[in-house]
Length: 398
Ligand SMILES: *Cc1c(COP(=O)(O)O)cnc(C)c1O
Image (cartoon, rainbow, N blue to C red):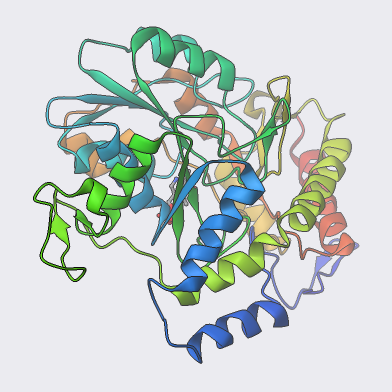
């Protein structure tokens, strides 16, 4: 990988280390090429295979491939029956798609605060925000560490809510030995290149519930069914007949992408193990600095981290987060911020959301940046990142 030269305080470097990067190999390229030479570019055998592969990997009964996690979340909300006037509870420390899916359905996202130690959606805050209009909880497994799975499961059961897990960060993670994909009512994945495995763009909904499965299937393909059992006007004249039974979209993934996904899925455990190794190295290096706060995980979870958060205790440092971020960049390490609280965005402001809704999330946001974390990072890259962080913490220590 890129060689960083942080030596004796003379920062001469050829290329920055970015916070994430996909890993595509020759096998992936051949898998895609084979589809391009075949008869089916979409709705073909590669898409069916990838669905079976996702079920086999996670243990889920049903999987539907979609063209993004955004469309997966929309379809899952539709399957959950979210509609105009309803409310969907989610976290503000996420990509905007986790909340936008409620608006797509004519519902309103409601923001629960985060737990200040795990940074995950706080179950007590979820419970406090439930009203007669709440239909679903979109709980994000932020960073790939898991949300408080059993607490959210219990809240949803107690209040008759649908548990939608936004697992864009957490494919491959598990809770008490069960893989993500089997923990919530519906689990949504992203296969954007920056995520743990990629299909170029792509998403999926996994579920054990046949009714949700059938509704997601309809939502992602025009509301059209070819399945006689799902038709309303049967018996039909012939096998050419299909019916549109609801209003759906075209949210399908192509076979070109699906072949890449199946090929990448074979490497997920290897990528995950390397991500864990890098996180352990970061934790070991930063654990002794009182200026740095490490993310805590809920017991019972084993995670393939998608993000590693460098959480600054700004009271112990003389710099701002911005200064630290810029100094990291000058050291050749391009961090990112995950995330600006969703309801701070102008669109949300215009929908009536105000600053101050989730104090823990806002406080957390002020002190964070994401360090480079991807399986193809070399050990030297990791050491260079640690060196840069160490140097800056020592430099800005109060
Ligand atoms: C990336 C991401 C999404 C959106 O995924 P797409 O596949 O790009 O639509 C949604 N939620 C979270 C938490 C994400 O990180």
